[in-house]
Image (tube, rainbow, N blue to C red; front, side, top):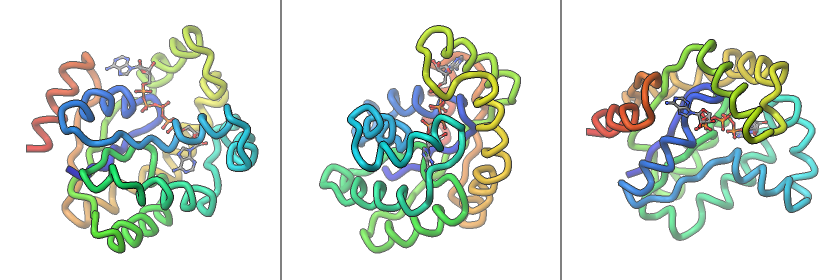
Length: 186
Ligand code: AP5
């Protein structure tokens, strides 16, 4: 299956993708993970992306399109994909439609995890303590949420218009939410 996972920062996209990829036998493609790997390796992409990531801002559409074009062109994607973290604004959504149309691998379902901001702030504060991810400080989380509201939330509307969107309650145990996602996939 070819799936886009949507939802605010900390809504559980990565956690759920790890479970769904086993069940569906498709790669989990997380642009956040790809960027963090590039930063850790000190690649030119990582060096360009780091400042925006640390501030909780979006990395430029141009850099992201290069990254996603390269990844979606790989052979394993032909089996399907779980895309997490892309698209993050309407320009990226349109660019992705164009790219996937060209590859003949269009999105079949967009799953959107619904989690309120209070729960998100609590989850990410816990992760900040446990893992020390550089963009999980309270101030940066607040900015990530604002960027989400202003730029990323409209992406759900893009998929609603084409009838691909399913919204799923993202509060509860990881297992229960996974069950809801599986049900939403039909
Ligand atoms: P990215 O890595 O995509 O960050 P994000 O969307 O903010 O997502 P997170 O990884 O924080 O959350 P998640 O929804 O995956 O939740 P998770 O499962 O981890 O992006 C990072 C940065 O990269 C961006 O800010 C931007 O700068 C850049 N970037 C990436 N893509 C880009 C793009 N397309 N364009 C431009 N820039 C881009 O869970 C969060 C926590 O909650 C974990 O600790 C987890 O254990 C816990 N948790 C999960 N489920 C539950 C549950 N049910 N109950 C309680 N806790 C839970």
